[in-house]
Length: 408
Image (cartoon, rainbow, N blue to C red):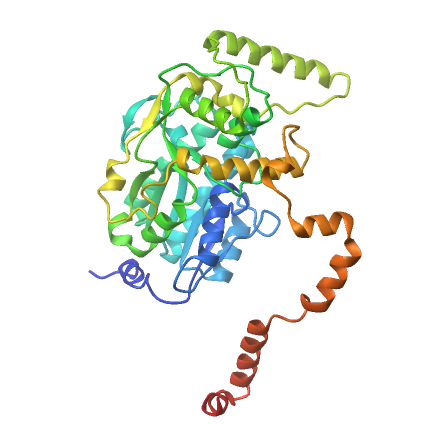
C-alpha cells in the first residue's frame, strides 16, 4: 500500500526544498548550515534558529515553529554542554530530540539525528549494532544519547518515523569559534599548557571530518529508501594514535612541549581531582574557575575506541575528499586557529610576522582615514547583481517581466 511517507520519499529531490537545523552555531551545525547556503547546486533553504528563536527544550515552541516553516526535513545537531547537569542534559539531548522526532513523524518528513561515539563502549572496530547498556551511573551526556537512539528505533517500529542516526567520533575542522572537543586539545598544545603527553602509546581513536559531513547529510536526504531507519558511523577510514597526533601538532607549532613523557592514568586522575578541589576552594573567596568540560572524557585518552566505517564504505555515498584526513588538514588548521586565537589574545605564542600582514588591517590600525576614504570612493555602492535581481522581481510583480526580457 502506498503511504504518504512513500510519497514524501519519492519527492525528496524536488527543487526549492527547505529544512530546519537545530544546533547551527556549533562546529557540526555550522558546517551543515554553511554547506546548504553555499555548496548545493539546487535551492535548499535551511532555517537555523538560535535558542532565543526556538528552544529545543520547549515542545510548544518546536511544534509552532516547524508547523509554521513547513520544512521538508529536520536536522538535529543540538546538544547541551558536556558538563551540564542532569535536567539540562535530559531536556536538551533527550526530550528535545524526541519532541523534534514526534513533529517529524506527524508531518511525515525525514529526521536526521546527529549522535555520538559516547553511546559506544571502548574497543576496536565497533559496529553500528554496538551500544552501551543503559544504567544509572552512565554519564549524563552518554546516557541521553543512548536513550535517544533507543527511542527513535521504537518510534520507527510503532509509528513509522523516517529517521537516520549519524554517529560522530572526535570531530575536527575549521571555523569552530568555541574551544571545545578536539580543539581544546589543539589549543592546549598551541598555548603550551600541556606539559606532558596525556595519553599512552597504542591508544587509538576514530575522527570525523566536519567538512565532509554535510555532503553525507545531503546524500542521506536524497536517498531515503537506503538510509531510512539506519545508523551510520561517519568517521575517517583509518583511526589515529593519539600520541602520534599530539606530537604531530606539536611539531607543526614548532614547540618543545608537551615533552615526550607519558604520565600514568592514575597520576592524571589525581591531578584532575586536585584541580577540582582547588576550583571548589576558590569559589569560597569569590573566584570562579570553569574547568574544561572535556575533563569528563579524560579517561578516554588512555583507552582505544575505534568505529567501523564498513557500512558507510559499502553505501552509495561517494566520499567528496577521499584523500583528506586529520593529518592532511593540520597545516591549514594551525594557521587558521593560531591566527584567530592570536587576534583574540588567547595565546601568547602568536607571531604575526610568521603569517604575514593584511593590508586592510594595517590601514585600520594606522591609517583609518585613508581606509574610510577608500571605502567611500568605491566600496559602498549597492551590489549590482542584487540590484538587478531586485529589479527583475519588481517587473515580475508588475507583469512587465516578459516585455523586459524580449527587449533585452
